[in-house]
Image (cartoon, rainbow, N blue to C red):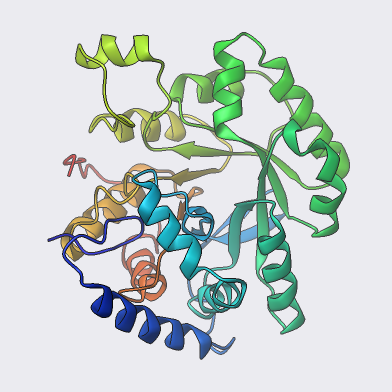
Length: 318
């Protein structure tokens, strides 16, 4: 039976068992403090440095890429108080940056941890849909803003990539480090060849937004839900290694499909760090309900991401 790790399902757990574990983990988070030294390896992002593990935000928003019910469970767990505790615990474990879109809960949580002495840095995911609240985003002083990957891919497919370039220039002119997120390695190549003003990339290990026609060409049929191809991480990390600018890989666990147990989770982390550049990092969403995933993942980064290395480890597609 699969554990509920990152975005995995709750099958097989009784309501009482789930409640007891959730309460225990929430209590542990509430006791976090800024006492542990930041000993994770770091990379340069523009003129800043961030840990090679960046905390992702999908669980905070209930974005599971699996099911609405699990998403509802995540949103119910991540109250403002627990989100604050989660961010404090991330910093306690050496994670120095949190990546998310703008939302009132994110705003209030970041303000709360900063008021308590946190030095956690914020990387914002945005696009022109945030035009009316861009002032609110800048008021939180993000160190970096990346153009949203789904929008990036849609614009590239429509031949409207200039909109991405215009957004990147606007961010760059405002002061934060400008970036581009994408799920498609070909779009990553085209962006990196463009000569735009982006300073980093966010790169999904899986091209989960293929068109129906692209999916049919790949597997010969339509699919229910998102398509996660075992060969996708090789394609994306291969492209990341060809680019001189830093990249942050995300969905390294295939939205929980690669973390059925500790061994499979570790294989995914090992693959990521063995196949990205030493100047790259990863973004991982963590759901610390049934185990302390923050501490577990930080430990895997200490083991496999420091010192950075590159070898011939091959992805097993699990």
